[in-house]
Each structure stands twice: as structure tokens, then as C-alpha cells.
Length: 362
Ligand SMILES: [Zn+2]
Image (tube, rainbow, N blue to C red):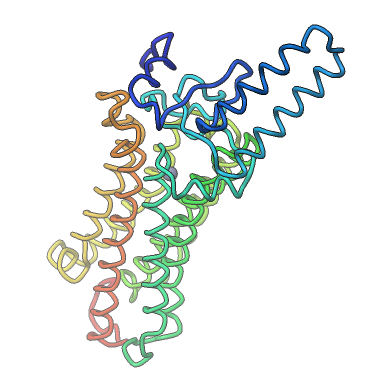
């Protein structure tokens, strides 16, 4: 159950911070800056004088003008954040974040300009925008490494490239979704589906180099595990296309689907530990890094599903440190830890050479 907003939330929020919070007007549209409010008041007085003599057609025309004016002001970036309880239903996602939400802004230009403003999505956007640029640079540097530092440069660059592609797709779909989320119901729906599909791409992409190096000398199980994770990943993407999947009631199911997809790695992990032995698996097999990565992802998913910490401090984590932001940071950290483990596996393969003389998968 969500926290109850006081009936006079506008008065409360205005009293607390008049310069950054704002309330909807009578017609449901959020107000704009103070200079605009004064202009609006004068206009409203003028229009009220003539109201009684208006025909319904003129009234409709007047209403249309006000909508146009609002859209124009949003386009110019003259909007202020609004409390949760006045958001339209399609923007109401987390009722523990009480203030600081962007109003609906049906302009991509306004949405992209809002990246540089402070609101509930600022942290969500920047964590994955910076993460995306980081993995893009790291990926470019890795792809341009000299071929002599690989046993099979072409093959290895493709499998590690699959990880980078998954990470870059996941992070870019995510920051784009958080940027345009307030555009309109239709746009938010399309981009939320891309956002969820991106998580599946990151998980599938992460499996590729890990399975390649861990089962380097057992290509058959490697191939089978790859096919299985691709099928499960495609199933997660398919389920993400259903409209109900993005609704707040399905938050736990969403976390469960992606944690389940990641945990499908338990089977190849057990196979690997049994065939290599615990000592080899934890040293050259990089199991420690894999375990740390899983811990980071699962912690992130649990915080996301349970909405911790804002559940315990409603209204205190509106802008910084709410569950979704922490989840984003843990995803970037988890992806980096995975990359570190995979590059250690790659280095081992380089020092061991292409040969497979010993018994075992590695
Ligand atoms: Zn997100």
C-alpha cells in the first residue's frame, strides 16, 4: 500500500519549496514559471469578463488556445516539477516518490532538454547514459586491441563484442526510456518495451563470452547452453511486449523474469565446477567474479522489486538514492565485474594457448 498524500498537497509543497515545486491548475495542466503565471492571470481576468457571452464554439476555441499555449511553453522548457498525486495514471509508477516529477510533456525536444534538469528521473537517466558511454569507449578500445594478444582474434572479438553490444543496447534503451517516459502514454509504452528487452540483451550478451571461454574445450555443451539462453532470452523479450508487463502491479514479476533468466546460468556453472573441480573453477575459472556479478544484479533486482529505501522514507528519496537509481548503479557495476571476469578468462586462454590437452571444459 502506498503512502497517502495530504489532501492539500499543493499548498504543502508550495510552502516547502516554492521555486521548485508546482501544482496543477484548475484544468489539470501544471503551471509554468512565475512570470508566466502573472501573464496567465491577466489573460484569465480578461477572458472571464467575456465568459458569459461566449458560445460553446468560442469556449472550445479558447480551451484549444490554452492547450496550444501550454504545449508551446513546454517546448520552450518552461515547466516545473509536480507532486505524484497529480500525475496522470500512466505516469504514476512509484507512489513512494512524492514530489519532483516531470509533468507530461508531449515534445521530444522538451524531454531531451529535461536531462539537464533536476527531477525524479535525473539520476536514472545519467547513471545509464554515463554507463553507456563508458562501455562504448571500453568496447572500442577492446576491439582495437592488437590481434596478437588473442589466440583466435576474429572469434574472440565477436564473442566479447556480443557482451559489449548487449551492455550498450541495455544501457542506451534504458536512458532513452527514462528520458522520454513523460512524453505520452504511447511513447512511454513503446520505450518501456525496449527498456525491458535491453535487459534480456545484456543477460544474453553476458553469457556468450563466458560460455565460450569456460567451455573452450567442450564446444558441444557450450553450444547447447548458448541455444538455451537465447531461447529463454527471446521468451523474456516476448513477454516484455505485453502491455500488462510494464504496469506497477507486475514489478515483482518483471524482477523475477530477469533474475530467472540470469539464474539459468546456474546449470552451466554447476557443470563447469563439477568438470573442473572447485579449486580450478574458483581460480582460473573466475567463479568469484561471476558470483559477485550475480550478487550485484540480484541485490539490484530485490531493491527494485521491494522499492527500498523509499518505502521506509516516503518523500525523502524523491530525487536521489531511490530504488530505481540504486538498481541502475548495481547493473552498471555488475556488467563491469562480468567484463573483468571475462577478460581474465581471455588472458588465461592467451597464456594457455589454443590447445586442449587436459581433461575438462576449460
Ligand atoms: Zn530503469
